[in-house]
Length: 278
Ligand code: KIV
Image (cartoon, rainbow, N blue to C red; front, side):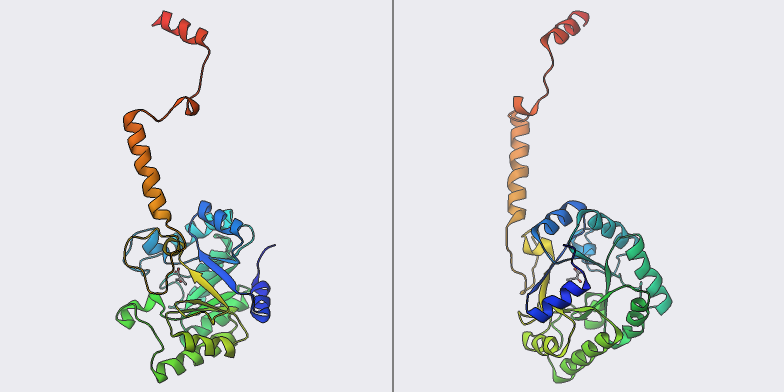
């Protein structure tokens, strides 16, 4: 069954936790989808985990469309959310609608996600008016890394916590269908989750949220660098890959691979004739 905006809303109402993972390519999207995850996010985190940038800021619309289209071809049932990259929605409401439309038309996404609160409500309203569901993103919003002065937990002071609650209410009022809460104290995320009728999907925001999202490279142990406190490694796929690749190198060098079972045969008569001609 295809997951939709109403599936996620019903999950909030019934207390059935929403599962969301990132994916950026066809093969991974297919595996994640087959496992039954509710939603797949083509995050602009692809700038770091797929393209090797330091942060998400260099990611372009073309990057997002390219990866979103690959994921859409691989995922049948998950609700597909594509990130709007830095500067694709901040400049004007009109540009925001055009770019959101491209992620739906060319990428095959079911919804778009954009970062920010009060300052992006006009964009959210206009995109929703164009019949495109919008997932908002509050808290440690990575596109604001320079403004924050680094990747820091948000909403720890009374003023900042109140601002996040106000922002959450405003993006809901503007028509967002869900909100990602990233890098905020769990107790603040609980309060926001209780105040909203739309689902909250947390990453580094505790287990009081209506759902969780993780970057798949983090939760499968594919990253070797620093991982944030909120990341749980559910498998060590990186170690498995290293093991398999090392075995491939040594078996190829020693001649163990390819063995007969991985080799095509031909009638001896054909080879004998060929040998005569050589
Ligand atoms: O880009 C991304 O992967 C995200 C998640 C971390 C929520 O925005």
